[in-house]
Length: 143
Figure (cartoon, rainbow, N blue to C red):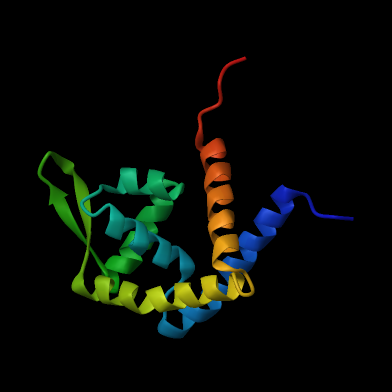
């Protein structure tokens, strides 16, 4: 029986995550930690609540990950000047260096996944995946 498109996308995503995990372990980081660091790089100065929303995780789950990343001196929490109860999150120099080490690992996984595709096929795939992501990102309309 042929897989439907949803199952194929889910399986492909799982295999990409697994391939990255295998490589990331060699430098002592997990994929969820890498995801937090990468998202934080794009949104430095965010508070924990907004970062949790961007990552689609519960704030308490993110808090635990941030505790570990802070202990590893990859992330720092600074007081939010606008809210005494909140913390703003920033990468440390060590966190930025780790992301530089992770970048080639991610590129290797993508290259492996796209092996045998022409540049035109890669562009076409990117366009189609972007359309799917856009379709699924829209808020549902009321009937």
